[in-house]
Image (cartoon, rainbow, N blue to C red; front, side, top):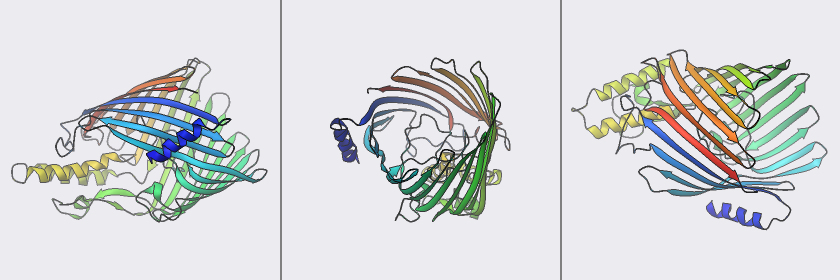
Length: 405
């Protein structure tokens, strides 16, 4: 892959009239472990990764219908040797059969739907919108037909063709459809998808603007199969596993939904309130069964091999890698835009079923060819909540990006 990215950069140097943008990004992050968490497992089972630095040299190229984006990345993580990667984020061609009727072939980012913290209709890309210091998205292989008019559009896409169920959603072969309509003051969206891993999915969403300051949005999605990774010991009985017991299950008939409203004043202040439900996330009962299993394993300290205990707890801690830790989530966001490139914000994410809290403070500043941002996130809430028991206590991050041309 590094050779492909290097070839892309060589092509850019000889592209002549192409639209080219190159940038350098430095993204350090410092994490604080929560060593009192029942899910915390330290070295050597789980290496310490308290400090990391991502360095991206990114190139974007556009010439005619050809679009390309590639990154040469160095990832330096505490306790490990720096790693270098070549990443081909996008490489696709947009063609046209007739006015308003086109086609796309290649690797492309395809984010769909409405929502700020969560987008149920994002059935192809499935972007994690709650992560911190995230790198640019990596697209999916696609063959698509697209139709555009002044107030409507639809896309029919074959994604990840020939890969079958793949190893995850981004590699799941599917036939997906997205429809968009501008109707007066409303933006209307609909999606449908047929895939190996999820079966049939279908959903609808809308955004309505009211006056100069208010907007309302909502979306819902039905899934024939929804996916989550559960510990087979917690669900079926048992105490210790000799291989990773976290397995993906295909429960049937799931739903995802989001609803929210945003007020934006002429002063630059903005308030967003949003709630969502995600069937892919754990229920309270599933977390409690995992808590019980972890407590039983911890209680055998001194009686069972320490490696068996830490290994099994480490496997269970993978539950914290999910996009949403609980199905029900509420988000309140306060932000400000001074009109000159400075944008501070504060967010509070709450899980009302258990009293969990996730507080995020941050800001961004933009100049002509530079952008700098930083943030701090604290996990907590009620003592027995999922966030308060997480193996990670807080995160601090920054990002500096400069565009060369």
